[in-house]
Image 1 (cartoon, rainbow, N blue to C red):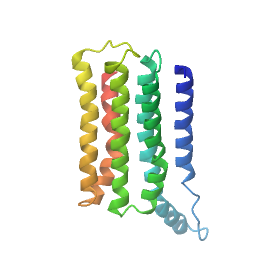
Image 2 (image 1 turned 90 degrees about the vertical axis):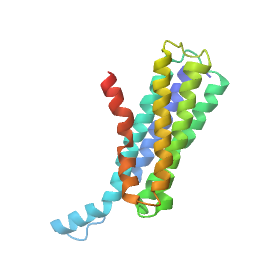
Image 3 (image 1 turned 90 degrees about the horizontal axis):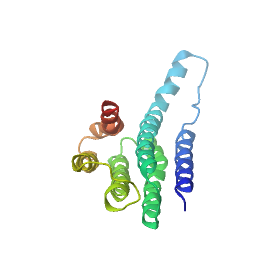
Image 4 (image 1 turned 135 degrees about the horizontal axis):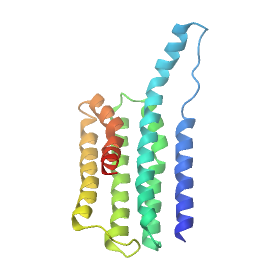
Length: 195
């Protein structure tokens, strides 16, 4: 498979994943034409909307990171293809987990699935990055040892946060939900500052 086909396939998967996310937001039933009925319907929709919003931005972060990796890759090999497919597999689970949390946001077992999937997605994306830039010759390594350590460190910190959030889900659910919503900022803010 060529790099172009891999990019097209991956971008198509990301587009489908985000489309499936929005399909979970159903138009609410409004009992009558009163403003109270309107706001009650919106309040009932809020958990699903928040689940959609943070999943949308998390998937956007994954897509941007994936794009940065593929931008530098000159050729793809079988190992890179399978790592990419494994990354897309975990990313494809987000619409299901998002819908699950939208319906059962008070269940710690359900909520813990989100950081668990973020952990697996992040670990595979870390491996994809490391394989492309450090372990193989498919991307030119113009990074210093310090830059490599910083990038891998960021992935490692993300993994540790997700492991902690899995446990916190069973102790203090609101903290886990807030941390999940803020997690995309962990990747976005350093990129904005760097550029």
